[in-house]
Length: 264
View 1 (cartoon, helix red, strand yellow):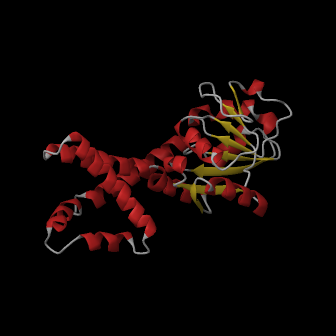
View 2 (tube, rainbow, N blue to C red):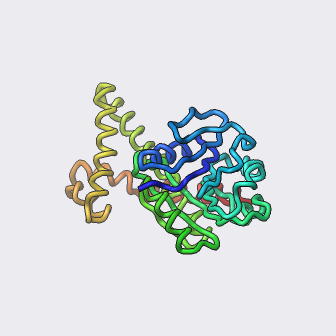
View 3 (cartoon, rainbow, N blue to C red):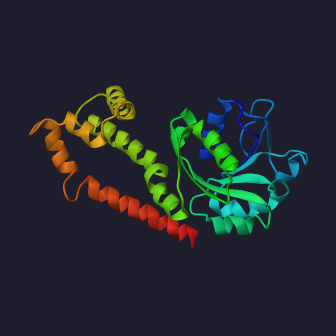
């Protein structure tokens, strides 16, 4: 399977993670627009300025992966390549309305996407929300993003904003858990290499078990927890009224509030 030709605008952490995933599945000749990234393998190429994009290059999809503050300047420079294409924006909190205005009347199919970094190893989750897409355009977007993980279409931008602090921010929560487990292992006297092995292996192995199991996450948790046992005592602390459930709710609310602030 050859994926459609892309113009990837911005190749930082997220853009680079997605690009690596797409390369592994085979891309039609594509271009990266980025001032700092390394040159990709042929037949792909990198340009440092929009003026260096060949005028006869007609990408099937433009991927916008710059920082939100750079959206207007980026889209203004890209207008010759926006007509009759699909623009997938990876920008958090930049609305369809603001994207449409920045496109300056170009005949562009707009899609907002919220991927996460496990896309780099084909294990990502991407939320998608589109405006005025026909079945063919929707299928092309699904094909592209499903090569780097699961795809979840939502019907409204409000649902996409609700998805952001769950799957978009979620890897950071998991990495924090691994970080804290490693620190606790050190605190209770385990050597550094063992602490790292135990923390990473526990988090990654538990995730793999969750992905492979048909049982709910709640059931899997209960399966590990003997009544009044060691795990139960730890969970009594983590699941207390002021414990992890309350903290996670507060964290998600804070993330959503920040997303709304950035969109205003």
